[in-house]
Length: 402
Image 1: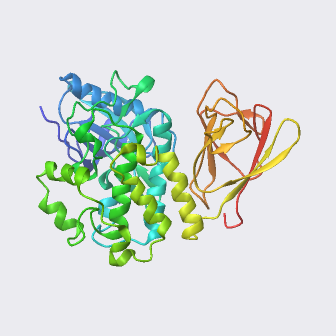
Image 2 (image 1 turned 90 degrees about the vertical axis):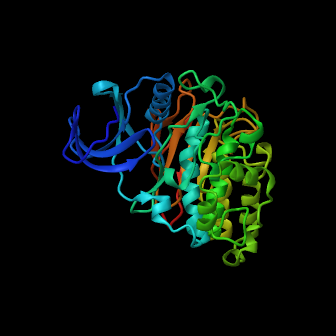
Image 3 (image 1 turned 120 degrees about the vertical axis):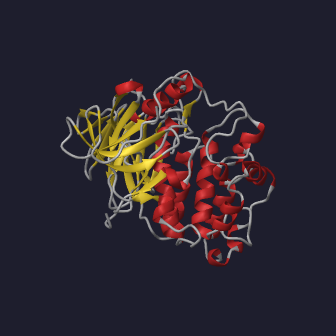
């Protein structure tokens, strides 16, 4: 029996205050809940859990969200099975609106604001990708903008892990069945049974293109709303466009003539037809967008990381806003020495001033301390904090604007 609750109803330990969001298989309610002194959001399945796939989708989302700590991903407090076998997930209650309700996509957004929003999405997704998980359904409806401008990713029902990180027995194979939303689906869905972190980068590229131009990437003569309405029931044509149609150069649009060339080039790379030609994951894209925000758009000053090696030598690393892999190998964004095993010890995430940077430990077997106290899994970095790992000392200095 389909469970659709109304204000005043009760479901187990939850008192329904309002309906917050509606999905195909579940609704999200703002609730009072036992054990919480503030309202929470509770996602409750419409149907009882009977089919295996229904249970697996719910388990995937719970598995992903319960382990995430990033400020750009919605927080999960609890989950379980309620009355009559309806699953639920207890999450933070958010003020604000979905990105597609917060912004009219037919109206171009300023480059600093558009890049800043997608940069935040990248910061949230960088932790997801670092855990070996692909989101698979990034779109404006799954991005939430809070009143202070903070952006959070709110829906992970389609997420799957790959390799050793497979979730609930899944991998990222699609069996050539379209997952996600056709308007933002990567072209490899047509010819491949596997999605990668570069697939999520493509979806973010489409969102950024739309924000900057007010158009879909493949049609210059019609607004985004016109194309969305025209192809509302035609996923095949959407996928045909992703696979075969060339991207309309961003700066060809009237409102994008002054967009920095480096930003236009980066966006074209994100929308490359082949995944191997794109930034490989959200962390790489976050760093590139952070560079654009600082150097091209003048929006974000850089921080400075002072590195002291075990012998007393001193070096400096510039830290633009982004998600930076910290370690010793040649593939690190913040490399402490030239040689190493190329396995990241931690992810240093910074959205730019006035926010603090945060350090997330990626390998729990390796000890990192702040002011002598081990951290796990995440800690904020205050100005003057002493970070220590493997005999190296780190100190982050924020720009004066922070």
